[in-house]
Image (cartoon, rainbow, N blue to C red; front, side, top):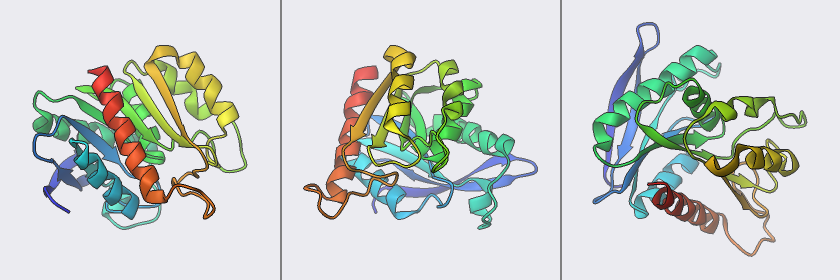
Length: 225
């Protein structure tokens, strides 16, 4: 991977520092604060691949760990610590975004924590949110409670979802997007699961899907500037 710099930033006195991977392609047009999912750190293959493809679209990324992944423990941090981490990432990101638009979001849990931080007005300088598989509900426990805070978000939101995502039933998610109105855009990837994997019988490959996601993010950013 090219143009990647390891950084550190402080979350709080109790949580200490976490690591980040800053990837800024030449002539980048925007910076995305890119939080990982619950079960994988910032250098998970999906995160690596997506960051590289976004770089090809001239979108820089700041991937970062939450304290529990920084410490390599399985128990997820309490909500206040997760939100503090997202807020701290935004503070760090402002140092590198310059005059370029700064967006925030992430994979699954990382995206949901970002939206909750945005709903609480914790993300200074963030112009929009990008969700790679928003986890609307737990598998087999369909509900819409996790979406209630989205109506308090005051910036544009892009939802990238698979039609086979077991953490977001499209029949539940689509009405929410409709209610959110013009500030939300939903892009459904036919046949993709929560990790954006396709069935072996699919015409497209997983790599093609990720490239499609990166291009959608770039087009969306161009439209919200």
